[in-house]
Amino acid sequence: MIYTLTLNPALDHIILVDNEIELGVTNYYNEDYSVIGGKGINAAIILNNLNADVKAIGILGKSNQNMFLDKFKEIKLKNSFFINEGSTRVNYKIKNLKMKQETELNGLGFNAEQKNLDSIKDFFESNLKENDIVVLTGSIAKGITNDIYKVIGKIVKEKRSLLVCDCTKDLLTNVLEVKPYLIKPNLEEICATLKISFRDDFSLDEIKKLVNELKSMGAENVLLSMGSKGSMFFANNNDIYKVGVAKGKLVNSVGAGDSMLAGFVYGLHNNLSIEDTLKYAAASGGATAFTEWLANKEQIYSLVNQIEVNKI
Image (cartoon, rainbow, N blue to C red; front, side, top):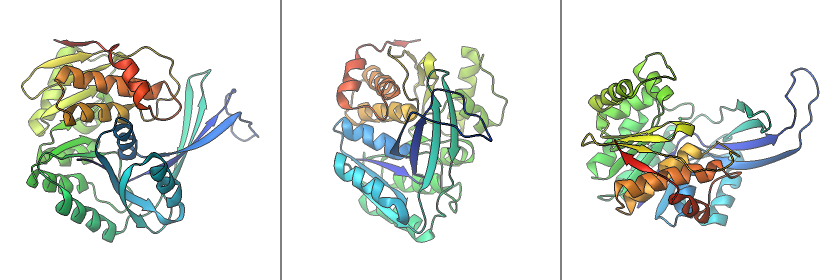
C-alpha cells in the first residue's frame, strides 16, 4: 500500500485572464474554476489514476470539507482525513497564459488541533506494514511543529516501510535525520535547505557537491527536479541519471512536481527498473503540465516512450 500525507491541503481557485491585472481598479476575467489541492492529495490522485493501491491521509477544515470528500468519492480515492475546526485554506491563482504570468494569493487556513496529529500518528502505527510506501510532502498547517515529518518518519522506519519526502528548509533538515529513501528537491529548495545563495548556473560538479551534502545529512536517493530542463536522479550507489522531458504545450504548472513524484513512486511500487521508473516520473509531471488539472492514465502513458533516460 502507498500512503500520502497532506498536512496543509488547499482549495485552488483558478482565474484565467487576458490582460495584466491592475491594482486599485476593477479587473475582468474570462474563466474560473476550483480544484482540490495539496501536494500529498495531488500525488495520491495521480497514483489512483494509474491504478496504484493508494490511500490519502491528512487533515481537512470542517467548514469546507465536502468539496474534498465529494471529489474523493467521485474518483474512488481511498482516504482517511481527520476533521479540524475552521476552514481548509483557499488559494487564488490568477493566470495569464498569453504573458506566461501567474499571480498567487495563498490562504493560511485552519490551526491544526493536537488530537488530529495524534490520530495521524496512531493511524500509521496501526496500519503500516513492511515495504509499504509513505509519501510525506508539502508544507504544514499552523499549529504543527517542523519536526512532524521526522516524528512520522521514525514510525515509518520502525515499520520497515519506505519513506519518500518532498519538503524543504527545516522540514527537510529534520526528516533527513531518519534517512528517507527518496527526496525530491529542486535547486532553489536545496539552496534554501543548505542556507546558501541560489544561482541558476550551477555546474554539474557543483550540483553533485550539493546533492552529496544532502546525502551526508541522511538522504539515500535524490530526484532533482529542474523544470523545463528535465531532472536528474542521484542513486544511493552513486549512479547518476539525466532524465529528459516530454513535448507539449504548458497549460498548468500546478501539481506537475507532485505528479512527477507520484510517477516515481508508481515505478517503485511496481518494482520497475530505475530507467522505467524515471520515465514514469517525467511522463507524469509532463502530462499534468499539459492539462488543466491532474493527468489521467492515458495522458501519462502517451508520454512515457518520449522520455529519454541516460546514465552519466
